[in-house]
Amino acid sequence: MLTEFGKFTRKLRIEHVELLKDMADKLNVSSSYLSAVEVGKRPVPKKWLNQIRNIYSLSNADYTELLNAADESREEVILNLANRGNKDQDLILSFARKFDSLQDFEKEQIKKILK
Image 1 (cartoon, rainbow, N blue to C red):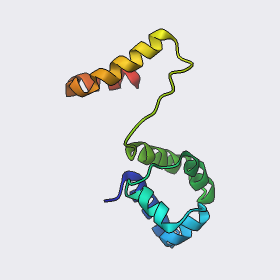
Image 2 (cartoon, one colour):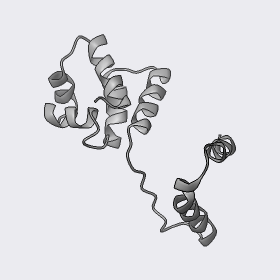
Image 3 (cartoon, helix red, strand yellow):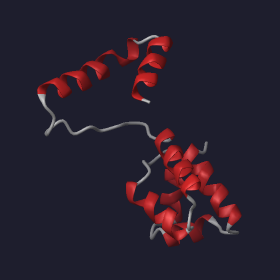
Image 4 (cartoon, rainbow, N blue to C red):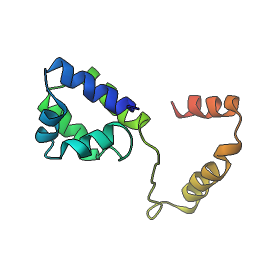
């Protein structure tokens, strides 16, 4: 099943009359690797976001859509706590520990605060 990133890149290829191999060649990867990223078997490489933006001359709106699609396709988030103060570390770790037990309305409240 395609991830949101996979849907975006497929749409982009259709608009540019390209095959998966064409985009893979432009990203300097194999078709199988690009396919694995599109279906979520591999994470979206961060460097691809700017490469795709530049290769396909994406508008700001399309680039934002690409970033959102990549974010929605992530299965994990890694935060480096090394340069964070104790209060920041405590907040981050508390959120991670409690996330699964939060109610939907609590998640929505947190989301509103963060926006």
